[in-house]
Image (cartoon, rainbow over all chains, first blue to last red; front, side):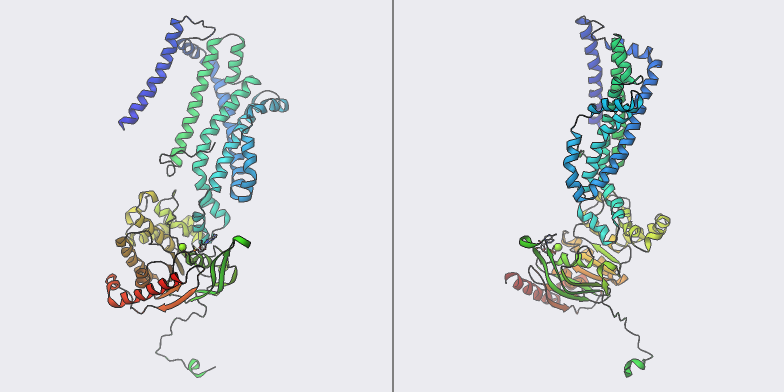
Length: 257
Length: 281
Ligand SMILES: Nc1ncnc2c1ncn2[C@@H]1O[C@H](COP(=O)(O)OP(=O)(O)O)[C@@H](O)[C@H]1O
Ligand SMILES: [Mg+2]
């Protein structure tokens, strides 16, 4: 117990120390505001401009979450199809791995071409970018289910659907939740990226505009807001994971990414 | 019409006669794979079990004992021959089957209560009222059975919180909760220490005498076979077939001290020699 408190204390100190060092170095080396503003300036800007930033925060979050929700739905569906059939798994696995290693940012220009700039490409990018880790994890979870566990239900005369619901899917849950953590972060990156390229809303757009107007401390405010939002999203899904799949996560990390 | 059947004796209580045996293997064989790599897991085997019997199947490992259980539970189909359960094809599920595997195979994400309740969720006719009864009648039923095997306080524990012996008891409960006509046990006590094993033998005997299902027990422990079964079949080495089929004459219920009595030791010695012979040949 005291160990975990000490670790928490240390990591908080590390973060605080990081900002302090940044502040001190900027003052000592006399760094220009236009290159690297001091953290204190950044936080003041963030505070002053918060009413203006708030709608953009909501925009980024909603694009991320809508895209993520769509991506999860598609990912789970594909994952179940691929994972429940041995043949489909063997056939589709190389293709999936291949697809998931394409840099998904490359799709942004295509979405802009099809749908114009705005919210739609941000949502679609967030969606596409998070599908593959989910498919791969669900499929792996299902395909690696111990045959003995399935045999138990087969001897009871269970149908394929009953086996899927009672053994396959619960067995795949730890993989699924582990992949959600990864997927939400990816969706977030995708949404912001699309906003910086083609949007008039969202934190990505704010940073891009501020950058072209040389409002350097606003750019950094955006960066820190993004970091906070990213950490928050990750934390929410980690918490969800440990709540839902506590039986499997007794100290081991099993995500396949 | 013959005379004896047309004039029923008024005082005689008719013995429960089942025209169709619980299990009937007719020259059933199992071959895995094909061509060069084909493995014969079971030579053509004929075996018949009446309802209510407790049969122990012993034999050297790899001789096809588990394969027979898988045939009976319809997990695999015979490569040749016939498997009839309750007089019909195994796939017809004429008899309700409960099976306990050698490894407890409890689902790790469910509590003991939820694991034991699983058959009530899957097997007819229980599944029809599962939604309604899972918090009422079914729950009580699971708790009563868990209590009977000494696990009353562990219903809400997860499998990883239990010892090996406790897991095997839960495993037995899951095989029994839906009152199967046919209970299939694949070396269920194999991995346990002697004391726990003897304790579970007694629990098993009580459950058998209480519910009178047909039981097919696979074991490599001759004392276990002699203590529990009404009939013992010995199988030859791989690919196996049944080479001896003898009743156990000791009256039931049996006391655990029985296994140290001279006649019991004599019986198990006989079996041991037979198995030693088939192993060396
Ligand atoms: N799925 C399978 N594929 C190939 N060979 C198998 C398979 N299952 C069992 N066998 C083989 O069949 C033989 C009998 O197996 P089994 O019935 O499990 O023996 P045991 O009597 O020890 O339970 C063994 O030699 C085993 O290697
Ligand atoms: Mg076996």
